[in-house]
Length: 475
Ligand SMILES: *Cc1c(COP(=O)(O)O)cnc(C)c1O
Image 1 (cartoon, rainbow, N blue to C red):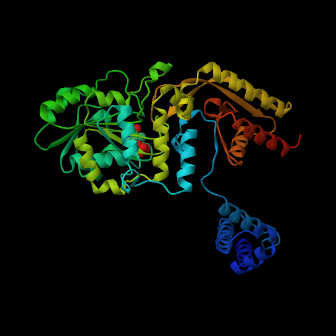
Image 2: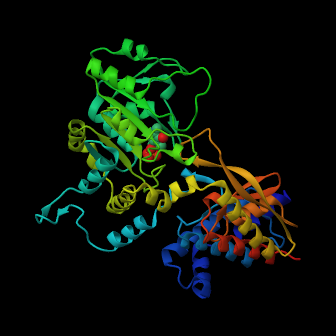
Image 3: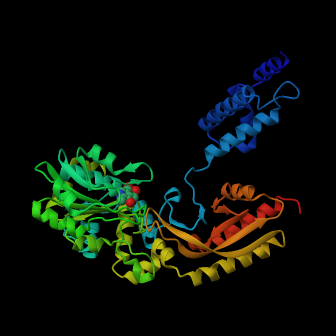
């Protein structure tokens, strides 16, 4: 068959790794590209070309591959390998704690401390007062107790780790009673039942999906029970005919049966958001005050700090947690620790916290401020667009994200753009693959940017991205 023949011809014209290395040696573009990257890029390019030929996606006019085709592939492969994978990007989605986009932006104070501690040595595990080995956790523990009212505290790598560690410490080999309505899955396949299984605790579900009563827990208690657990159903809302048992009720049950009570708050917050016209989320202080023995929550959700798992609770249980060998495996590193300490310090003054912690600031920005902000971005874009883009401002709804306030859209303002001559999908794709990438969404044939999650300094980046898009497009 003629087709097979030309395909074989094309396959035979594929260069070898050595040919490509020779070419890269001569081309100045590759001057800074290390040999290991050149070899990997050559292999990748050859492999890609081979599959394209076999799939019939690549056919050679002249019966062989052009030099240019091959060189472009190698250069693309090398360029990707030379670019840092984890990159800064512009979040125009309006989802504040966006798990795929890095959750919380850090406060300036946290960034400064990362810079200082990362660049030098530190008293990470050294007590400067006595000149001997000290605890890595003591500073944040004191702060956490001060802010939350807890007796003791501890931090680990993330909240999933905190839950695992607590269950392992308190309830290994014992039954843990949880409401069916709270067996949640959090993104990234963190499921309470799975974590429970890993910890060696035995899950005992009680109640129905929509309704659980105190008597359901009470009936389940026996001498193998080791813990009563409440999980904040942070990423979904149960509405309608529902009933759940409050933490206070669980604490009362715990006292009656001499069982510890734990609450996994997930998106823990120290701030009562109802003061800022937002939906109330249970605060860490309330959970501590209600008498729970242990409370766990994330450092990078509503708290607005770095990724961390925070555990507050009674001295007795925290002492056992600190002794658990798993604690060492889940240890928090110094950069996270210093960023967390700096973030927690801001909470000593709530006004300051709301101003300086980006997550809190974005959550509490009033709609009228966002309307004005959107107006300014729209005006800048109109100027840059010079009649080649349709731009307007529309009302929208931002999301808290990170599995908090799932039912609440925060009233916001979005800039909507339609670029003449380019489809909205192309606009989205070009902005996403730009440098830095800009992530927004498409709605009704328009590219939508919610200004709530945009920093002022990012306006220029957006303008430049659209300008270069227009430049690359004939009038
Ligand atoms: C997010 C969440 C977790 C996991 O926390 P990470 O910090 O992401 O590990 C656990 N439990 C609940 C209820 C959560 O919302």
